[in-house]
Length: 501
Image (cartoon, rainbow, N blue to C red):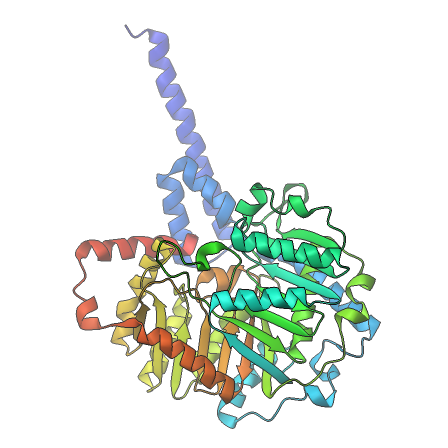
């Protein structure tokens, strides 16, 4: 039998929960108005918070509040401070400003007029990083070969090893890497290792890094912008950079993380990926990139970071002209990756090839791709047929029809999964590095790319990408248009929610 007290309690509880939920949504709406953003994103957050009371508000607090414009100044201030100190030390090998690299070996060769206009744009969007000549850049298009070469470079290190990555796992490859680094540290080589706290969370929870805390000459730190004591809670801002610099003379970068997905298992091929070995003056700019991030996370005395051993005299090692393209949620680097990609698309005259595992470009870039195809540029996009992020792949599929109708050719690489990233512009320039063509890489992550102006390197890279095209299936509109209604619903659904992820 229901007592009168029970009858009164239910409406009271329901009333207070409704008031709390309604108030929370109003506060969310007010915050969206105070911090304006894309209108579709704002409406989606309001919808999500309204229909999923606890989950929606919690998700907005964790992922929707973009504190980068307010908090990003901390990283910006740290970077500026590091650059000032770098200048004050007057290192003859690496004054960071473009006009400071006057050594003959660093001077770039004149660029062709057709591609030089792209570099002029980068002079403004990435003015901090100079165009440097005299580099050698070698493609490592097999992940296992790349691991072996990097492990050999670690074994041969004499002075220091600087290493940063997004995913470092507590598995066979991750353990081998950590053991090699510890061995060289014990041998007197200075090792600085930085992993992303989000991407490498599993290894951290399994105490992989903790086990190496007492190795002499080896420092290990996480890149994280989550610190409740300092009111920093930026889960979205992650270091997606992948760099290894040995003795300031050789560097490796690209798409490879350090975990076992690249190994053959149960008769299946491992993930495909590209990495690159770099020698020459541009290595010093990559060194500077690492040390700026390290300084931000550790506050290690700058006298140690700017030791002469970290910045040896630049030496010409090849004919490649290249420049570093760093991007991240700071004032100096905000959306530089997107600006560079947009410039590459708009400046392409004959052919544009995009290889990326995650393809969800913003509307501005979609329009640029469509316009490039309309003016006769051969635009080709190569993505995995089976993605390790199914929801993102569905959001990507939603874009296919518009691009296909505009003349953009899309290819899906048959399994195994391909994680490589590369862009080729008119066989004269290539963009390589860590960034994907998705909102996280273009807006939120700290990324490091290189743009290489060299037809010989570009030709080699193009042959490697052609191998991936040869193992792909072209998406034809006449067939794509026959996909089921439920497939279209799934694409629309995940595309709707992709901007708030």
